[in-house]
Amino acid sequence: MQRNNRKKLGNQGELIALEYLQKSGYRIVLKNFRVGRIGEIDIIAEEGQDLCFIEVKARSSTIFGTPAEAVGKSKQENIKKIANVYLLNKNLFDRNIRFDVIEILFEGTSPHNFTLNHIKNAF
Image 1 (cartoon, rainbow, N blue to C red):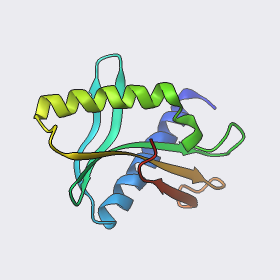
Image 2: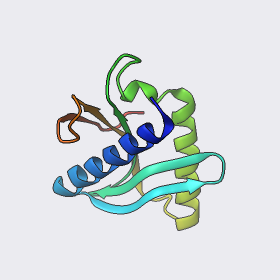
Image 3: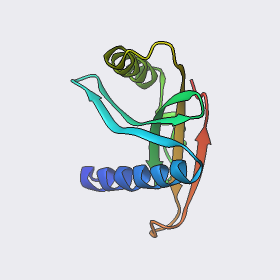
Image 4: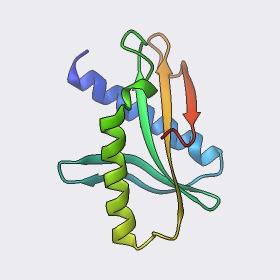
């Protein structure tokens, strides 16, 4: 798949995840929090007392595994580093935190046909 198509798919997935989270009662704090070359966290949101760092993975097939399987140990470590920078910058070390993954699998060519799986405390 071409880079532009992957980017488009990823952006569509993030929009779907944001809508899902808002409908589920989450408060969106920040989108696409980036730390230099380390990377970014797709969504930072609050659910009750929990501050959630959420990685969104969207795919159009499972030929290379599920979307969540793309969040390997290296990606998890980067997300944790980025979360620590955010917590330090905001002085939020007294908060309950968790790391979630939202996987979105598009079915067919319609952006409206998809399954969404929210994995809380994914790592």
